[in-house]
Image (tube, rainbow, N blue to C red; front, side):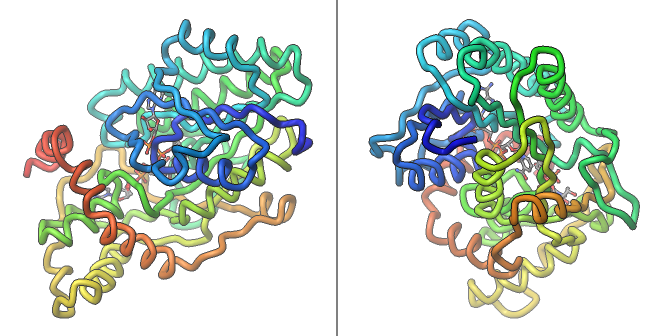
Length: 353
Ligand code: NAD
Ligand code: DAU
């Protein structure tokens, strides 16, 4: 895609964790782009994530729901988008277990609404691109060996991953059936600043600060591949501009950790930061009831994006974790805001605490 032909970019879910990093990256780096951020501001969306760029002349925000077809169609008829980067989603596996329908609504119906609206724009714009951000969870669970490649068959196990798999299939189907130019990436677990403290790393950082139990599901021997969010945003930038239309790219950190080992590393780093005695935070580890259908292991083979687009992660896990911990310490107010109100209810229900 030619850089200077791209003018109007729609980023959905730009007030969320990964979306806010992508919005900042695009607004700061491409002053010739107009970036419109569409977000419903659910519990996971937070305009405080975007303070740094909210006054930028090439940035604007619109609150809206991608599952509302009339709203989406109106938005597309008022703006001639040259590209869509679609991140809006219900993203948390545990919530999908208690409320799967919301995941179908946003992740499946919302994506199809965006695809329908995109078809209209793409008819008059040969450079149009629909970029769908997805997850490695669509591939299901690995055993102790092996890696997910772009050719791994889909085998989702949670309502969340089933909804994301469905949305991926719809994107491909719109490419095959209607010729919509698209690209998809499937990424492993992200961590970093601005992540809502329902996900493992920020939840445990917050609990350690507060001397609260660290609820490790099952025996803790589940494995995830962790990637620093800014490296994901770089990958998204690269794929949007240089990715081949109709292709999928896997993005991962080559950085596998068992949950229990990661938790212990986090405890050690936090003890140092808080000047606590070595081993103090580890005492907070509590093994709790397992997540139903818990996938044993995810691990990404990111060879394709590395060889074809030259991308690789830029920070080590320790650097990324230190940076993340520092961010939460420096943004206690952000943490206080997002852990009040509904969060307390959610926490009580999820952890019986
Ligand atoms: P998040 O939950 O932090 O943010 C999601 C954003 O989408 C929020 O700002 C929310 O307000 C918005 N949103 C939700 N429903 C909406 C609707 N109906 N209409 C408009 N906006 C809506 O999620 P995240 O972790 O930043 O993930 C972003 C994307 O990346 C998702 O598509 C997710 O599946 C994918 N992904 C996430 C990870 C990860 O580790 N977090 C890894 C791989 C892929
Ligand atoms: O792999 C990419 C996916 O990573 C994304 O698509 C999802 O949007 C994102 O939420 C994430 O899913 P996970 O389920 O892997 O992330 P989570 O942080 O919820 O959990 C990470 C691991 O830690 C998982 O094995 C479950 C475990 N866990 C999680 C929580 C919240 C615990 O042991 N205790 C907890 O309290």
